[in-house]
Length: 265
Image (cartoon, rainbow, N blue to C red; front, side):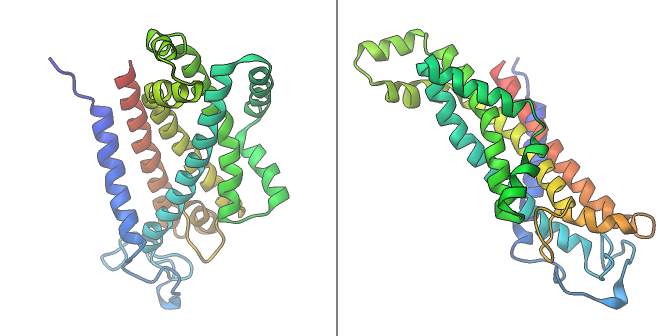
């Protein structure tokens, strides 16, 4: 009897719903995301404002819709940068080994021994703040984790029979790496990417919360949490809803990673 992968199904549905709302929010929102209304400051959730309003009278739901796009963009860009360079570094060092592999892996160990947020803060102190600088900083910090995963997979597969057969048939090393070995690492890589996306969402929210990421008036979930902390008792919905959305995004991708891991087992 075929076993259903409920984690993957649930994760895809939840993430799909959030993604649809996010895409809509980039083109249309119920209210202007930067328009201020002094008569509607800190209003509780209602039929007019289903998530309430903030201290400037801006609709929280509209800002969450649009802010999710920023969070998704930063997280996705971070994962793409980390995955692209991590795959290349991990594949080459894992296949060729030797002194280069030892040097790169020791550098990886040093970088992974520090909290990623701390390294990002150090990086930002040199390049400055802003959305695109956060993407660069986070992307660089994510390279070692992807490189280590791909390296271990390449080492596992490079001694397999299908690789020996490709070598006997005259295939070059680069063709063996990128055509024969890397496709077999797809599930592990996708699982790592889903986990990395979650980490990137949390990192972006943390940086924006500290005022180092997305700058006002552009909304992001972390920035909204930062702005809401002064109103946690007078207008709790302002902090609750962005926090709930962050949790749902992480839950969705966590379930996707669990589902992908179940496929590989």
